[in-house]
Each structure stands twice: as C-alpha cells, then as structure tokens.
Image 1: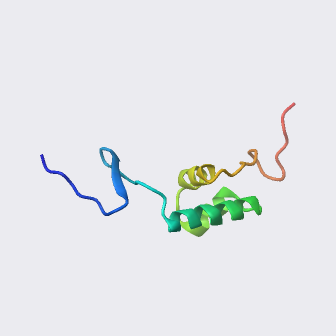
Image 2: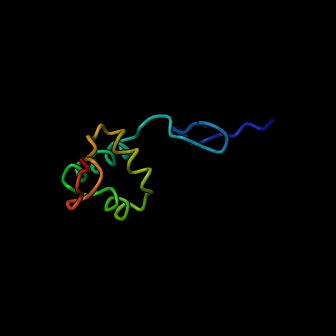
Image 3: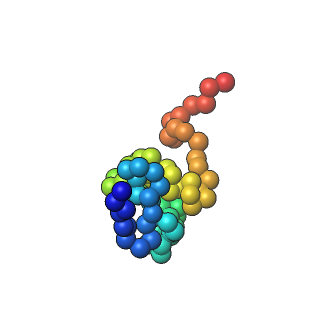
Length: 81
C-alpha cells in the first residue's frame, strides 16, 4: 500500500477528497471579505462571479463565517400567505 504525502496543512478527508486541516490566514481573510460583501448587500451570485467559486462553496463559506443568511428571493419577491 502506497502512502501519499500532502503539503503541510492538508489532510485526506475521504477517498478522492483532500481538505485543509486548519484555516490559514488567507482562508480567514476570504471568509471576512465574503461576509462583509454579503452583509453589505452583495448576492451570493455576485460573489460567485467575482471569486470564480461555485454557488455551493460560497454558501458554505458564508455559513462557516457565521453570516446570518438572508431569506430567499430578491426585492420583488412576494411572500405567500
């Protein structure tokens, strides 16, 4: 059985997936930037376009940063009664 070595700060989460073992300063900075932009009114789709990351990863990063998520829909969204 061959053991793979990963760069410092990375670990294997499950087969085929390598995860960072601890947040780095760059990761923390990304979380802060995303949170500030989102809380400043930017949509997740806008953050997707500016970062090049997927919708799911932006959503996960916002949740990880402790951001209070807005309800679904835009300014024309009407709540059903």
